[in-house]
Amino acid sequence: MNWQALIAASLCLWLALGQRVDAAIATDQDYKLGAGDLVRMNVFGSPELMTEARVSQSGSITCPLIGSVPVAGMSTAEVETLLARRYVDGGFLKQPQISVLVVEFQSQKISVLGHVGKPGQYPLRASSNVLDVLAEAGGLLAQSAGDVATITHANGSKQEVDLPKLFDGDPEQNVTVGGGDRIYVPKAPQFYVYGQVQKPGMYKLERHMTVSRAISAAGGLTAKGTERRAIVKRRDANGKEKEYSAGGTDMLQPDDILFIKESLF
Image 1 (cartoon, rainbow, N blue to C red):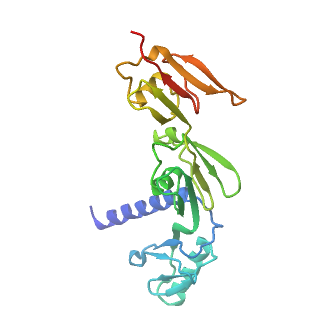
Image 2: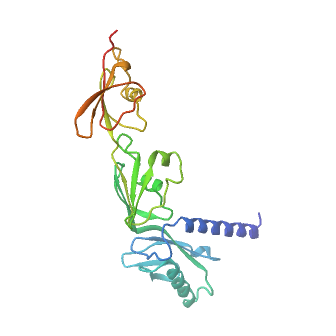
Image 3: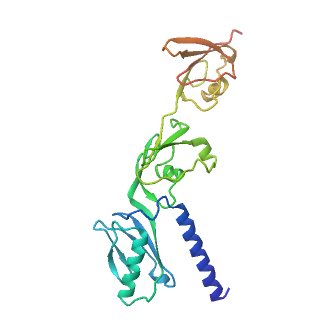
């Protein structure tokens, strides 16, 4: 490949990446930079001037040749104009074409709460979505996390995310999140298994949990156990506990107590 073709290919790649990032950024031109934000500056035709700089506590970034530039409280478009003027006034460039992208929105954070590995606040990044943020938060706690997470957006609106569908690759569940959003992963409902099973105890109630699946989750039947004489203890709307005979395909509900009896034969 000759140099002209290489330059043309590089330009196409640079534009494509810029479009991809622009489409993914959760904010718009009104976003104001703040301390801790990480920005990437590209100067078309001058790749040696490309730099990433973090906004200091004093609100400035340091750029090649022109040094410290105050940017706090400015939009990326305003920063592009300011940088272009600085390069022209300094005699370094005549008609610079500068793009500024926010790589990390450190001044804006997303809270991840509930049953994840590392609950806390995480910086908003370009293209931040639910899957990215959950990964940063250490993923779900497999034994206790529920199936539906709730996103409370900064404007007060709420949105639910079906977690099994999310991890199965459903793009509709992998929604974009913005600064000030909160993601909450609740505790999954539980059920209990006692009697003639290998591992009696409390277990996570997964979707479509049948009596047979519950027995399997508890390690299976003992040599004396039988699925045919299963009993479910369940509280009604008034809190009164009732007993029901249950078959292998019957569905369990939150806080059910499944008791597996001994076989009569």
